[in-house]
Amino acid sequence: MSSRTAPRLMTLQRHLGWPQTGAMATENSPLTTHVLDTASGLPAQGLYLRLSRLEAPGQQWMELRTSYTNLDGRCPGLLTPGQIKPGTYKLFFDTESYWKERGQESFYPYVEVVFTIAQETQKFHVPLLLSPWSYTTYRGS
Image (cartoon, rainbow, N blue to C red; front, side, top):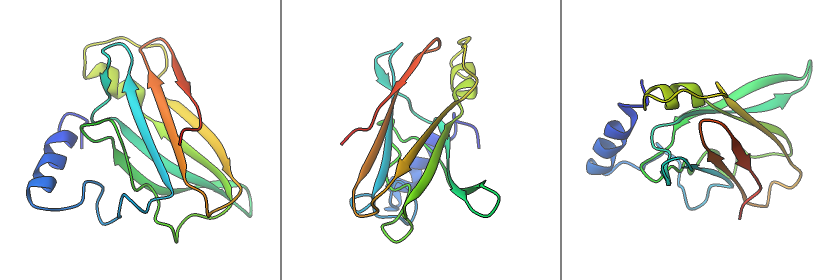
């Protein structure tokens, strides 16, 4: 699915009464992200992302979920409370496709944000501020 069709699919799902992020309840999700396109000053809609966790043995990345940002540039409900556990996680953002669909050249083909969750009882929000030439991230609330 291209990032151009993702917002249309999400609109249809909302119209049909489906949750925006599939079967996961967004209010209870311990992990969320929000991407803002700082070049336009708008949310980054339809940006493809992938969540992975570093697993032993062999320290391999295990894909947990793929999704697209919604109309507000958010991707709530990445994990259910039962899925989260202490460990090292990675959010991969396909920035190259996002900028190409907007007719914009960019410097970074993707952004990977690697972070550690020490206590599964906390909530984690990972914002990404994105332009064609830079990005910034931090632990949000």
